[in-house]
Length: 202
Image: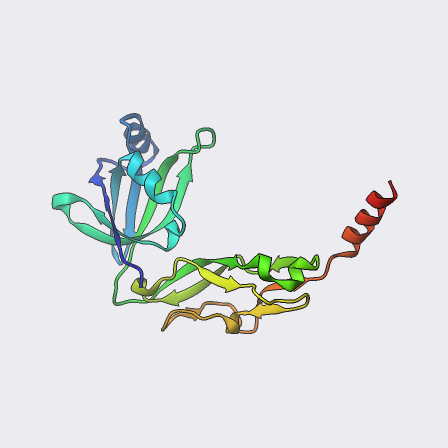
């Protein structure tokens, strides 16, 4: 079960690009909270607080309690982060309100473990990932931070399908067939073999 992390924020005046630029000049990161059939509100945050969270794995699957002090708290998911093209620092964050009583759609990243224990990979096979993330519907409190696939024992030609994955109770794939291939161990390609032979001849 995912527990919400408290993140401090303040209301900010105005909206639009001009107001956002003014917020950044003041040393803050502008953002917005929207959704749950309520009016959107503009916020600003300490950039150190934002950076501390986006640096963690699973930022987009983590529940946040955005704390506006006397203006209340909002249970949210981060939906988008805009980064500066040069400094790579966050310059805007979008949060979407969620309700514990309603299922939501969320994209969960797929990660792999025990590649070194896969006989297929040891023989030169290649991990072919078809789905790098899977969109599911579930309760906000049951959002997994990742979907982990164990490659221990997988031979060349073996594959993992969506129906093979263990999702949280109540979670269902969204717009993906249960038989869809998530990943497989593919045989070395002819191109790779030819490259190896050419290098050996040289």
